[in-house]
Length: 486
Ligand code: SF4
Image (cartoon, rainbow, N blue to C red; front, side, top):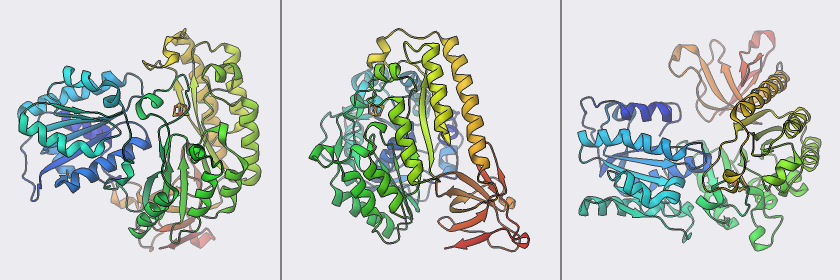
């Protein structure tokens, strides 16, 4: 897998087009596979496990050309239940793949992830051409299910609700050499009324600290320079064994790992964001000052209805303490507009908090009911009202984002290179990557300099702030910085 190639959407639509002439791959192993991933980082990382499990069983990842030619033996869809109309979107896509299966009868189709966890029997019934349905807790069963489906000629469904082993024990085919995801926990003990995650992922299970650190060391040995710690609620890590300081201890332990340059994590919950975590972030040099801090609403009444256990004053107080300890921190957020019962006054509270919080960016969502969640049964806000509020919020946040990005102009930033910026045009001499606090930076390589490679660190002067990213086109002759560290 390569992050610089076609997007998921482009690949999925390629697969839905009529087939061209297939070109035989030199090594097909047990079959050529392609994983189509929907949803959050957790799912992206689960797909790395799915790929690892398949490759251990002899499958070979599809090349870009094989996706274009639809020369594939196995398609796995790793589904998400969080997004709007998740079921319709899933059935729509696997319906398109049914046509492909008619053209290639030996093609196998598997469906995993959160929708499979929720809708297991329904998928097999509604889409009988799907060969295997597996859940979030038994990714390792996939090769066996595919073998059985091939042998008996019938769809195989195996979704378990109990977590018998942590998926991190499974083999992994990582998408990036230099940036690795590492799970620290799965599941969530909270009960936010809009969220389906506690149903699809279950109660929180934390990994052992030693296992997490061993996996991080292994990633670094394999070339990773950056690690992102993953969990639905990372800062409640350790609460299950009564250690309220376990997450900050983990961050400080990451600081001891030689060769590990950058550590990020997602997502923390504002309710449990304690001073020991802020201190660990501020005092451990390789923990980046980047934080995704989901507000959801600025109205205390709505936060209560959402069953979010903090209030707006506490949220802003924590932000103040974070910024006092780390003035350069970039803080992003999630906000839901039009949660059931949201009044104009409630929405104005959200606008007030957004003005005060000055988030670097925000993922803003118009509320849409997720079947099976308590909020789905509450009285909904009319769509036109939600849309008008949404547009006002987006406009406000765009303005704040632009103002915050403008502060970078003229500053030197250190960027870890993740790829070429103009991927379709190699003549641009641009590379791209993230600076320490996570902002995307496109760098113009000065004439006469060799192109930096993925994983190199480039320090460059920011010459222009875009709407969502930074441009660094430094001219060393004018005293601007351009420096590469391998
Ligand atoms: S904290 Fe709330 S929103 Fe986040 S995963 Fe848990 S239940 Fe869902």
